[in-house]
Length: 212
Image (cartoon, rainbow, N blue to C red; front, side, top):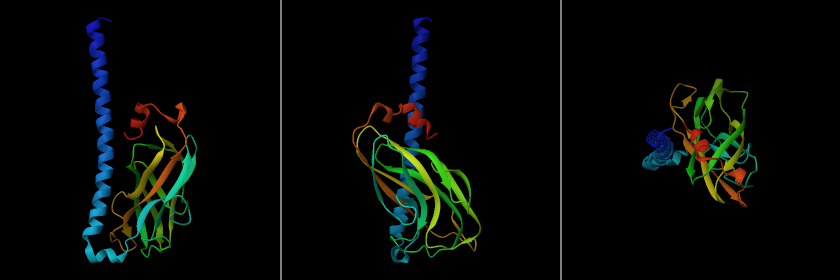
């Protein structure tokens, strides 16, 4: 191949890589903006904040909201998507029929690989947790805690530390009367311990592909 064509090929490859990187960055910024909007809206409601809005989020426990888990590098572990009340142990107090939810990163630089998903068989689910899932009930769901899914996951990161991930509303939630109640997000802190091995660090192209 002539040198000029080889240079053009490398230039096109670099440009394509940069464009994909920008797309991934916009995705991160989009979810971060959505989360910030939810927080601002909750603060701006003033007296309404006393109503203790229910939350869609991720927990280290299936039966209660546990906001922290510590894992070693190159270790599979389990997280749970759920709907809970505003405070730990507080019931939802909001019957629902349609729950759109999505898992997204809040901080700081790691990638969450979902290896397997066990959905709540009492609900119907469409989509994917990292792209947006809609969980629908055939009849009204009125429970203290609603379990949505159990996720077998693995963190990919270049260094140890605290990684903050959350789940939150992906679209309009519907109660049993067809109204659209307000729900908040709920995060979990994943602390990575130890030292990464080469198998812990996926190529950047593979990481970006998860967010296309």
